[in-house]
Amino acid sequence: MNELDTLVAGARDAFAACATAADLENAKAQFLGKSGRITELMKGMAQLSVDEKKTRGAAINLAKQAIEAALTARREQLAQAQLQLQLQAEALDVTLPGRQRGMGGLHPVSLTLERIEGIFGSMGFEVADGPEIETDWFNFTALNTPENHPARSMHDTFYVDGGSAEAPHVLRTHTSPMQIRHAVQHVKKYRDRIDAGQSMPEIRVIAPGRTYRVDSDATHSPMFHQCEGLWIGENISFKDLKVVFTDFCKTFFESGDLVLRFRPSFFPFTEPSAEIDIQFASGPLAGRWLEVAGSGQVHPNVVRNMGLDPERFIGFAFGMGPDRLTMLRYGVNDLRLFFDGDIRFLSQFR
Image (cartoon, rainbow, N blue to C red):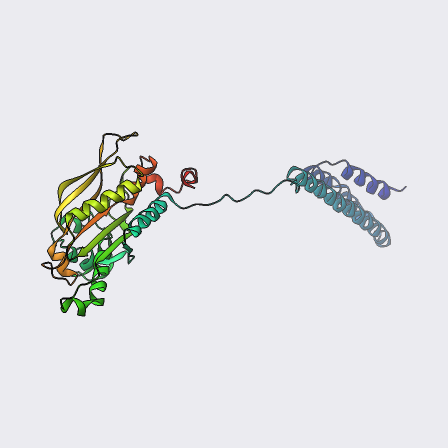
């Protein structure tokens, strides 16, 4: 075996002994680097004749190619070994049962809204839905809210682009605008009968949906839900309001011993007006009065804005917060939990 055969054999043995890619690069430098054995052999050809250079150079090149081939082969072996280790570490047992996607469910507030709609639907109330970006007229003016009312303040209301300085657009602060929209359409439908002095089918509607105000704490959110109710006819009294809302609360909370209190208050769109408080006879809230809604006889100006004569048509309206009802029904003490999107919390209501 000549010198070059011995060199190639030594390179193969050195490469085979390398256990990592870093070791292999170090071994490569010994044979193919700038100061490696092949480079030294090439430098030693300077003293040879032209014919000897041709013969010697060809032999050295063959040896270099053999060493490079051995290097490439060892690199592939190490890479394959590394891949096998990775595959073993990340092995997947295909015989194991798959991970199933958990069943979803309705949001607790959505459950409450469905429950509200179902209860009032059994009493003959329709459900109205409409725009969340409202005009000033539907949101304030038609509801007898004067221009200097605090609810129109920039600190209480989200104003949005659109409309004009005289008629701005807002994110609705309540769903009462839908009472006006629904009533106006209802009156248009029966205008001829009304003008002829004939009876009109009563307006009986609830308007659940999202509303917006500049407010945020444990019991308030900038985005929240409301459900407004309206019943207009020729002989609808405050007594009807008390009966309807009392029946609703007892059905919603599934409690026959629930007590309601109608406490005098003020709202620009009703007259007289009352806050509605409830009291539980048992449970963690037993004995406490809790405000759940506002209500009252519809103000004559609001009835006029519906296109009706307040001397002939009368009725009541109420507004409640489904978010608060959800908190009471499920014993949740922080409104923000409903909107944080925490699956651990929401999954309890599936």
